Image (cartoon, rainbow, N blue to C red):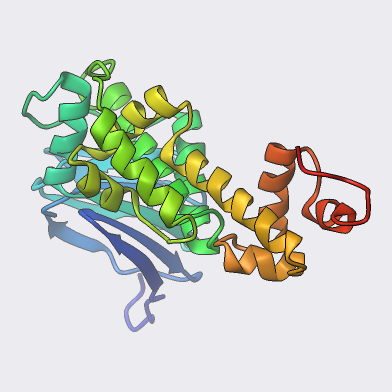
Length: 288
């Protein structure tokens, strides 16, 4: 950066969840402030599709290509830069508390304690990167329910640890958890529209989020999110039968918009909400 040249300051927005933080840094074109050595209490992951980055980390310099996921262990000192590239850049950061990571390890290792160790500062995993970007897109666009986004985020954490966090593999066996599953199922039946988080259901059940998802799916045949969507579609049908317009029914039942409702309604019913509503009460389409 030349003397007197103004720095391009980023716009930052984000989401704070239970033990997790998602941040989006949007840098305009221009010189950027170099990041001084520092450490985080959390694990840090970062992904940009625009430019490569450089981490000064663990007594070395590490290149993180565009599209790769940068990984920094909790508590370890690091610094960053962009190889002098001054084009516009968006980076999506995920911060994960050690307590959340302990829960992920317990799910994988059958209750054993410990922490994952991310040996490589640059994770090159195209499928995982696509899922990572999709989760960020869902949070920022508002697409899908909170439960759907939470489940997708949990899937990313499990994949990060299993594939790249020290060679751990598999999951602990799913136990028989009828009481916990019944509690969650009853809650979703009674509150299909509530914007409930996966962590809330896990607390209700007294299980870890990952173990709840797998136990629920083993018992019910659907993940908690899929079950919630099913109950919401049932409620939509009730509203449509009362003459409520499709757009209003979508809004009243927690769907992002009419299009979001339509995708799930067709998947579960084989017909669009509009066609379903038009056929009610005139001798036409009948719900079976």
